[in-house]
Length: 206
Image (tube, rainbow, N blue to C red; front, side, top):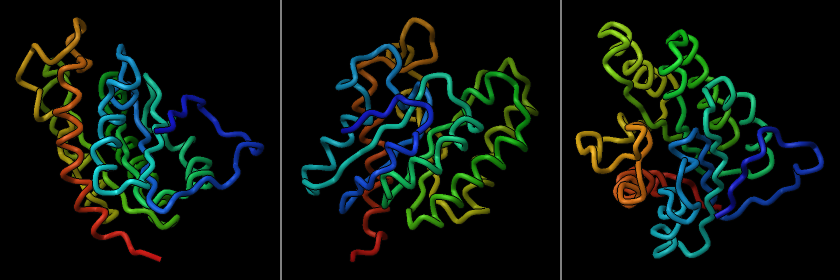
């Protein structure tokens, strides 16, 4: 797996490194495996699982801790040009919600990213997120609905809540209560794997 922590790709780096099957994960600290060794994160584990049946698959992890949908939108065009992925996983939005950013703008950013990826020939998987209840029930509902609407409006695939397999188990989180720990990562990898397997069946072969 290639981990790409650099926020912006310079023109010098925009050489083609596309593979027969390339998955681009553009995300935040959940995708980056905050607080964990790189090899313990769900993205790395996901690549290992996928390679059992698809040895040539390559996962590019372009996740940055603290990133928002606005940051992801700024970074995506260069990443699409450089890596030419067949599948793009958009794992962003959690920080928008935690910072109380406008939900309509978050949804618009998700939709724009999804459209850009599709125009570049990639299938898109949007992973939804939930935020703590202290933000108020109205905001929470609009926040959750934004992922659904973004997927529906762009005909993208949706994983409604990325942390669904671990959300109710405190033992699967680090001390901050937000970031999954190492024990949770295989469960997240399996959860995303189910959705990605369906996507690969839909990707046209050359």
